Length: 278
Image (cartoon, rainbow, N blue to C red; front, side):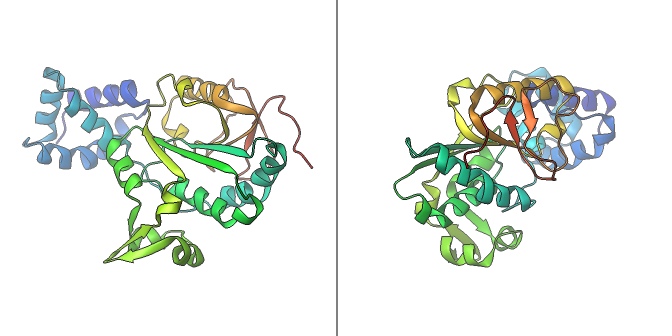
């Protein structure tokens, strides 16, 4: 049984290091995620893990606690609608708008094990005939190095594949290796993965035409959401598009965005963004 002191300590640590805003009702989540870590590191209980993290300067152990708690759910083409909008509305507009530079940059924040950025890469590869010679770069970032390692490898289990990946894309972009499926090298080259904490100043990553920041804001408190959204506005091109999760909203948060439509799964533009190119 995790002690009340340990619960409070870990909740404060998570909020400080990752922005994850949990309360005591999520005690079960602490136990589920941290018991395996405690055993892995040789501690008899979560309470012993708590004492070790609290009383030492072991930054690696602190990071492992954060990593264990921030590994998020993901799948290929999760909540299909945003990917349809990406392919049928946003990219056609960018093809016209960026005709001179022939360049598109996309950022997937909190990308976990890579299914989201690779889903976007597959959609773009399927449109390659409309974009010959274009320079397309996708950046996937996450706070957890372990999930980024899996993303870079591009190897997924049958369970991963069955969760949302269309069969034609499986045939075209993957090859089977034992019980797993491996992405082809051309698609992997479209995506770069880097470690990034959304609580930090990330202006160094440059400017993007499209940002996917889905299903992560729901874990932040209002002030953290405001800060992160404001910084995203700072790296989004004036004509750019921001995609959030289906259950996420910017209502009640002072922010620089306006909704680009009323349908669930729609995206956001910066306030005052130029109209779509027809």
